[in-house]
Length: 363
Image (tube, rainbow, N blue to C red; front, top):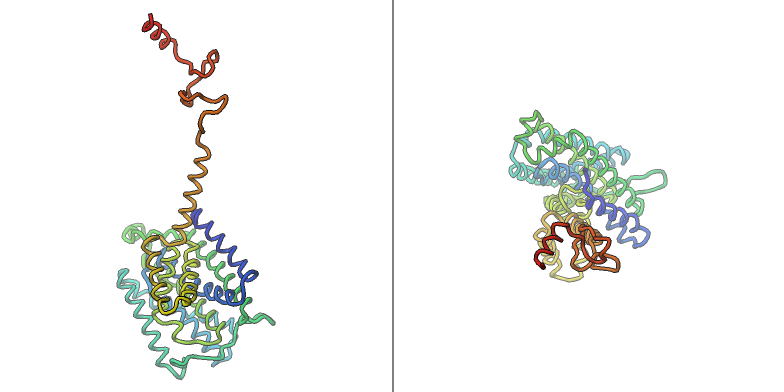
Protein backbone atom coordinates (compact mmCIF):
# COMPACT_ATOMS: atom_id res chain seq x y z
CA UNK A 1 0.00 0.00 0.00
CA UNK A 2 1.52 3.34 -1.11
CA UNK A 3 -0.25 5.56 1.47
CA UNK A 4 -0.46 4.22 5.02
CA UNK A 5 -3.83 4.14 6.74
CA UNK A 6 -2.94 6.77 9.34
CA UNK A 7 -1.52 9.06 6.66
CA UNK A 8 -4.62 8.65 4.48
CA UNK A 9 -6.89 9.46 7.45
CA UNK A 10 -4.92 12.62 8.24
CA UNK A 11 -4.95 13.63 4.58
CA UNK A 12 -8.74 13.24 4.53
CA UNK A 13 -9.05 15.49 7.60
CA UNK A 14 -6.83 18.12 5.96
CA UNK A 15 -8.94 17.95 2.79
CA UNK A 16 -12.09 18.49 4.87
CA UNK A 17 -10.48 21.50 6.57
CA UNK A 18 -9.48 22.97 3.19
CA UNK A 19 -13.09 22.67 2.00
CA UNK A 20 -14.56 24.22 5.16
CA UNK A 21 -12.18 27.18 5.56
CA UNK A 22 -13.76 29.46 2.90
CA UNK A 23 -17.25 28.77 4.27
CA UNK A 24 -16.48 29.15 7.97
CA UNK A 25 -13.55 31.56 8.35
CA UNK A 26 -12.92 35.10 7.23
CA UNK A 27 -11.00 36.52 4.30
CA UNK A 28 -7.76 36.70 6.31
CA UNK A 29 -7.66 32.94 6.82
CA UNK A 30 -8.59 32.29 3.20
CA UNK A 31 -5.58 34.36 2.15
CA UNK A 32 -3.33 32.72 4.76
CA UNK A 33 -4.18 29.17 3.77
CA UNK A 34 -3.97 30.09 0.10
CA UNK A 35 -0.34 30.99 0.81
CA UNK A 36 0.03 27.68 2.70
CA UNK A 37 -1.14 25.78 -0.38
CA UNK A 38 1.28 27.62 -2.67
CA UNK A 39 4.34 26.87 -0.53
CA UNK A 40 3.06 23.30 0.01
CA UNK A 41 3.64 22.68 -3.71
CA UNK A 42 7.35 23.36 -3.22
CA UNK A 43 7.38 21.08 -0.14
CA UNK A 44 5.69 18.27 -2.11
CA UNK A 45 8.44 18.65 -4.70
CA UNK A 46 11.12 18.43 -2.00
CA UNK A 47 9.41 15.30 -0.65
CA UNK A 48 9.88 13.66 -4.05
CA UNK A 49 13.57 14.57 -4.23
CA UNK A 50 14.56 14.02 -0.61
CA UNK A 51 11.91 11.70 0.82
CA UNK A 52 11.71 9.31 -2.10
CA UNK A 53 15.03 9.59 -3.94
CA UNK A 54 17.24 10.50 -0.97
CA UNK A 55 18.50 13.84 -2.36
CA UNK A 56 19.36 16.18 0.50
CA UNK A 57 18.49 19.48 -1.17
CA UNK A 58 18.14 23.16 -0.26
CA UNK A 59 17.53 24.14 -3.88
CA UNK A 60 13.79 24.80 -3.92
CA UNK A 61 14.21 28.63 -3.84
CA UNK A 62 16.30 28.37 -7.04
CA UNK A 63 13.40 26.97 -9.04
CA UNK A 64 10.81 29.08 -7.27
CA UNK A 65 12.84 32.09 -8.42
CA UNK A 66 13.19 30.72 -11.97
CA UNK A 67 9.43 30.20 -12.24
CA UNK A 68 8.50 33.44 -10.50
CA UNK A 69 10.89 35.70 -12.41
CA UNK A 70 10.21 34.00 -15.75
CA UNK A 71 6.53 34.73 -15.24
CA UNK A 72 7.20 38.31 -14.10
CA UNK A 73 9.59 39.18 -16.95
CA UNK A 74 7.52 37.57 -19.71
CA UNK A 75 4.26 39.21 -18.62
CA UNK A 76 5.63 42.70 -17.93
CA UNK A 77 8.40 43.07 -20.53
CA UNK A 78 6.93 41.01 -23.38
CA UNK A 79 3.14 41.03 -22.66
CA UNK A 80 2.93 37.23 -22.65
CA UNK A 81 -0.31 35.67 -21.40
CA UNK A 82 0.09 34.80 -17.66
CA UNK A 83 -0.87 31.15 -18.18
CA UNK A 84 1.64 30.80 -21.01
CA UNK A 85 4.26 32.56 -18.88
CA UNK A 86 3.62 30.07 -16.07
CA UNK A 87 4.10 27.18 -18.52
CA UNK A 88 7.32 28.78 -19.81
CA UNK A 89 8.58 29.03 -16.22
CA UNK A 90 7.89 25.33 -15.72
CA UNK A 91 9.74 24.42 -18.93
CA UNK A 92 12.69 26.64 -18.05
CA UNK A 93 12.92 25.16 -14.54
CA UNK A 94 12.91 21.63 -15.97
CA UNK A 95 15.73 22.54 -18.39
CA UNK A 96 17.78 24.24 -15.66
CA UNK A 97 17.30 21.28 -13.30
CA UNK A 98 18.41 18.86 -16.01
CA UNK A 99 21.47 20.90 -16.99
CA UNK A 100 22.52 21.43 -13.37
CA UNK A 101 21.48 17.98 -12.20
CA UNK A 102 23.74 15.78 -14.32
CA UNK A 103 27.04 17.26 -13.07
CA UNK A 104 25.95 18.19 -9.53
CA UNK A 105 24.18 14.92 -8.75
CA UNK A 106 27.52 13.10 -8.89
CA UNK A 107 28.17 14.56 -5.43
CA UNK A 108 27.38 12.64 -2.25
CA UNK A 109 24.39 13.67 -0.15
CA UNK A 110 25.94 16.30 2.13
CA UNK A 111 28.07 17.80 -0.63
CA UNK A 112 24.98 17.94 -2.83
CA UNK A 113 23.12 19.80 -0.06
CA UNK A 114 25.91 22.38 0.15
CA UNK A 115 25.91 22.72 -3.65
CA UNK A 116 22.16 23.37 -3.80
CA UNK A 117 22.43 25.96 -1.02
CA UNK A 118 25.24 27.66 -2.96
CA UNK A 119 23.03 27.61 -6.07
CA UNK A 120 20.33 29.54 -4.20
CA UNK A 121 22.89 32.17 -3.18
CA UNK A 122 24.13 32.46 -6.77
CA UNK A 123 20.63 32.93 -8.14
CA UNK A 124 19.92 35.58 -5.52
CA UNK A 125 23.11 37.42 -6.49
CA UNK A 126 22.13 37.30 -10.18
CA UNK A 127 18.66 38.69 -9.41
CA UNK A 128 20.10 41.54 -7.34
CA UNK A 129 22.82 42.27 -9.91
CA UNK A 130 20.72 42.31 -13.08
CA UNK A 131 18.79 45.44 -12.12
CA UNK A 132 17.80 46.39 -15.65
CA UNK A 133 16.19 43.01 -16.22
CA UNK A 134 14.97 41.79 -12.82
CA UNK A 135 14.56 45.10 -11.00
CA UNK A 136 17.31 44.19 -8.56
CA UNK A 137 16.47 44.53 -4.89
CA UNK A 138 13.37 46.59 -5.77
CA UNK A 139 11.83 43.76 -7.78
CA UNK A 140 9.20 43.80 -10.53
CA UNK A 141 5.76 45.32 -9.96
CA UNK A 142 2.55 45.40 -11.98
CA UNK A 143 2.54 41.70 -12.88
CA UNK A 144 -0.85 40.77 -14.40
CA UNK A 145 -2.68 38.02 -12.45
CA UNK A 146 -3.98 34.76 -13.81
CA UNK A 147 -7.53 35.03 -15.16
CA UNK A 148 -10.21 32.82 -16.70
CA UNK A 149 -12.84 34.96 -18.38
CA UNK A 150 -14.07 37.45 -15.80
CA UNK A 151 -12.60 35.48 -12.87
CA UNK A 152 -9.35 36.96 -11.55
CA UNK A 153 -7.11 34.79 -9.42
CA UNK A 154 -5.82 37.89 -7.69
CA UNK A 155 -9.03 37.66 -5.62
CA UNK A 156 -8.66 35.62 -2.47
CA UNK A 157 -11.29 32.89 -2.92
CA UNK A 158 -10.53 32.09 -6.60
CA UNK A 159 -6.81 32.02 -5.77
CA UNK A 160 -7.49 29.74 -2.80
CA UNK A 161 -9.47 27.32 -4.97
CA UNK A 162 -6.86 27.33 -7.74
CA UNK A 163 -3.99 26.68 -5.34
CA UNK A 164 -5.63 23.77 -3.57
CA UNK A 165 -6.79 22.18 -6.83
CA UNK A 166 -3.15 22.29 -7.96
CA UNK A 167 -2.03 20.79 -4.63
CA UNK A 168 -4.50 17.90 -5.11
CA UNK A 169 -3.28 17.37 -8.69
CA UNK A 170 0.34 17.47 -7.52
CA UNK A 171 -0.32 14.80 -4.89
CA UNK A 172 -2.14 12.59 -7.40
CA UNK A 173 0.62 12.97 -9.99
CA UNK A 174 3.50 12.37 -7.59
CA UNK A 175 1.87 9.32 -6.02
CA UNK A 176 1.15 7.95 -9.48
CA UNK A 177 4.89 8.25 -10.10
CA UNK A 178 5.59 6.61 -6.73
CA UNK A 179 3.43 3.62 -7.67
CA UNK A 180 5.24 3.21 -11.01
CA UNK A 181 8.55 1.61 -11.90
CA UNK A 182 10.22 5.01 -11.51
CA UNK A 183 8.91 5.27 -7.95
CA UNK A 184 10.26 1.83 -7.11
CA UNK A 185 13.65 2.91 -8.44
CA UNK A 186 13.44 6.04 -6.24
CA UNK A 187 12.86 3.92 -3.14
CA UNK A 188 15.89 1.75 -3.88
CA UNK A 189 18.00 4.88 -4.47
CA UNK A 190 16.95 6.38 -1.16
CA UNK A 191 17.97 3.34 0.86
CA UNK A 192 20.75 1.51 -1.04
CA UNK A 193 22.20 3.36 -4.05
CA UNK A 194 24.94 0.71 -4.31
CA UNK A 195 22.29 -1.99 -4.65
CA UNK A 196 20.49 0.13 -7.26
CA UNK A 197 23.61 0.11 -9.45
CA UNK A 198 23.95 -3.65 -9.14
CA UNK A 199 20.30 -4.06 -10.18
CA UNK A 200 20.88 -2.10 -13.36
CA UNK A 201 19.11 1.07 -12.20
CA UNK A 202 20.64 4.21 -13.72
CA UNK A 203 21.41 6.05 -10.48
CA UNK A 204 22.18 9.45 -11.94
CA UNK A 205 19.32 9.29 -14.46
CA UNK A 206 16.69 8.58 -11.81
CA UNK A 207 18.15 11.20 -9.49
CA UNK A 208 17.83 13.75 -12.28
CA UNK A 209 14.20 12.71 -12.82
CA UNK A 210 13.43 13.25 -9.13
CA UNK A 211 15.30 16.57 -9.19
CA UNK A 212 13.31 17.75 -12.25
CA UNK A 213 9.96 16.80 -10.68
CA UNK A 214 10.95 18.71 -7.56
CA UNK A 215 11.99 21.73 -9.68
CA UNK A 216 8.74 21.78 -11.65
CA UNK A 217 6.58 21.89 -8.51
CA UNK A 218 8.79 24.60 -6.99
CA UNK A 219 8.45 26.61 -10.22
CA UNK A 220 4.65 26.43 -10.05
CA UNK A 221 4.79 27.61 -6.43
CA UNK A 222 7.00 30.57 -7.37
CA UNK A 223 4.77 31.58 -10.28
CA UNK A 224 1.62 31.41 -8.15
CA UNK A 225 3.17 33.57 -5.43
CA UNK A 226 4.29 36.19 -7.97
CA UNK A 227 1.07 36.29 -9.96
CA UNK A 228 -1.14 36.53 -6.90
CA UNK A 229 0.84 39.32 -5.26
CA UNK A 230 1.54 40.94 -8.70
CA UNK A 231 5.04 41.58 -7.36
CA UNK A 232 8.34 39.68 -7.70
CA UNK A 233 10.95 40.31 -5.02
CA UNK A 234 14.25 38.55 -4.29
CA UNK A 235 13.18 38.36 -0.64
CA UNK A 236 10.61 35.73 -1.63
CA UNK A 237 13.31 33.38 -2.93
CA UNK A 238 16.35 33.77 -0.67
CA UNK A 239 18.24 31.02 1.15
CA UNK A 240 16.01 31.32 4.22
CA UNK A 241 13.10 30.06 2.13
CA UNK A 242 15.05 26.89 1.34
CA UNK A 243 15.65 26.25 5.04
CA UNK A 244 11.97 26.87 5.83
CA UNK A 245 10.82 24.48 3.10
CA UNK A 246 13.27 21.90 4.48
CA UNK A 247 11.85 22.41 8.00
CA UNK A 248 8.25 22.16 6.73
CA UNK A 249 8.91 18.72 5.28
CA UNK A 250 10.50 17.33 8.45
CA UNK A 251 7.94 18.89 10.78
CA UNK A 252 4.98 17.56 8.79
CA UNK A 253 6.52 14.17 8.07
CA UNK A 254 8.92 13.16 5.33
CA UNK A 255 7.76 10.42 2.90
CA UNK A 256 4.09 11.09 3.71
CA UNK A 257 1.25 12.59 1.68
CA UNK A 258 -0.09 14.78 4.48
CA UNK A 259 3.32 15.94 5.80
CA UNK A 260 4.04 18.69 3.24
CA UNK A 261 0.62 20.28 3.81
CA UNK A 262 0.70 20.05 7.59
CA UNK A 263 4.30 21.27 7.79
CA UNK A 264 3.58 24.22 5.50
CA UNK A 265 0.57 25.16 7.64
CA UNK A 266 2.51 25.01 10.91
CA UNK A 267 5.56 26.96 9.72
CA UNK A 268 3.39 29.58 7.97
CA UNK A 269 0.66 30.12 10.57
CA UNK A 270 2.44 29.69 13.92
CA UNK A 271 4.93 32.59 13.52
CA UNK A 272 2.11 34.97 12.55
CA UNK A 273 -0.02 33.98 15.51
CA UNK A 274 2.99 34.02 17.86
CA UNK A 275 3.47 37.75 17.26
CA UNK A 276 0.82 38.33 19.94
CA UNK A 277 3.43 37.23 22.50
CA UNK A 278 5.59 40.22 21.61
CA UNK A 279 9.38 40.24 21.56
CA UNK A 280 9.58 36.55 22.48
CA UNK A 281 7.54 35.42 19.46
CA UNK A 282 10.56 34.29 17.40
CA UNK A 283 12.03 32.38 20.35
CA UNK A 284 8.66 30.73 21.04
CA UNK A 285 8.34 29.62 17.42
CA UNK A 286 11.85 28.15 17.36
CA UNK A 287 11.24 26.28 20.62
CA UNK A 288 8.02 24.85 19.19
CA UNK A 289 9.89 23.61 16.11
CA UNK A 290 12.63 22.10 18.25
CA UNK A 291 10.06 20.37 20.47
CA UNK A 292 8.31 18.86 17.45
CA UNK A 293 11.57 17.56 15.98
CA UNK A 294 12.72 16.06 19.30
CA UNK A 295 9.41 14.54 20.46
CA UNK A 296 8.15 13.48 17.03
CA UNK A 297 11.22 12.80 14.86
CA UNK A 298 9.05 11.10 12.21
CA UNK A 299 7.06 14.31 11.81
CA UNK A 300 4.15 15.71 13.75
CA UNK A 301 1.39 14.62 11.41
CA UNK A 302 2.22 10.96 10.90
CA UNK A 303 3.32 10.48 14.53
CA UNK A 304 0.07 11.85 15.94
CA UNK A 305 -2.04 10.00 13.37
CA UNK A 306 -0.24 6.72 14.07
CA UNK A 307 -0.65 7.26 17.82
CA UNK A 308 -4.38 7.83 17.46
CA UNK A 309 -4.65 4.75 15.25
CA UNK A 310 -2.83 2.64 17.88
CA UNK A 311 -5.17 3.86 20.63
CA UNK A 312 -8.22 3.01 18.52
CA UNK A 313 -6.86 -0.45 17.70
CA UNK A 314 -6.20 -1.19 21.40
CA UNK A 315 -9.70 -0.03 22.28
CA UNK A 316 -11.27 -2.23 19.60
CA UNK A 317 -9.19 -5.23 20.70
CA UNK A 318 -10.22 -4.56 24.30
CA UNK A 319 -13.87 -4.79 23.29
CA UNK A 320 -13.30 -8.31 21.98
CA UNK A 321 -11.75 -9.69 25.19
CA UNK A 322 -13.88 -12.06 27.39
CA UNK A 323 -15.54 -10.41 30.37
CA UNK A 324 -15.90 -11.64 33.95
CA UNK A 325 -18.36 -14.39 34.92
CA UNK A 326 -22.01 -13.74 34.10
CA UNK A 327 -25.13 -15.79 34.55
CA UNK A 328 -24.95 -18.93 32.45
CA UNK A 329 -21.26 -18.34 31.67
CA UNK A 330 -18.16 -20.10 32.93
CA UNK A 331 -17.63 -20.21 36.67
CA UNK A 332 -14.80 -18.44 38.43
CA UNK A 333 -12.58 -21.55 38.38
CA UNK A 334 -13.29 -22.51 34.80
CA UNK A 335 -11.04 -21.80 31.90
CA UNK A 336 -12.35 -20.91 28.46
CA UNK A 337 -12.29 -23.86 26.11
CA UNK A 338 -12.74 -26.59 28.81
CA UNK A 339 -15.92 -28.56 28.01
CA UNK A 340 -18.58 -28.80 30.69
CA UNK A 341 -20.15 -31.93 32.07
CA UNK A 342 -23.81 -31.56 31.12
CA UNK A 343 -24.85 -33.45 34.29
CA UNK A 344 -23.04 -31.12 36.65
CA UNK A 345 -23.81 -27.43 36.33
CA UNK A 346 -20.96 -25.04 36.98
CA UNK A 347 -18.18 -27.70 37.07
CA UNK A 348 -15.84 -28.62 34.25
CA UNK A 349 -16.04 -32.18 32.96
CA UNK A 350 -12.91 -34.22 33.75
CA UNK A 351 -11.61 -37.41 32.21
CA UNK A 352 -12.39 -40.91 33.56
CA UNK A 353 -8.76 -41.47 34.56
CA UNK A 354 -8.90 -38.40 36.78
CA UNK A 355 -12.14 -39.68 38.39
CA UNK A 356 -10.56 -43.07 39.18
CA UNK A 357 -7.47 -41.44 40.60
CA UNK A 358 -9.67 -39.34 42.85
CA UNK A 359 -11.60 -42.40 44.16
CA UNK A 360 -8.33 -44.21 44.92
CA UNK A 361 -7.08 -41.26 46.96
CA UNK A 362 -10.32 -41.08 48.98
CA UNK A 363 -10.65 -44.88 49.31
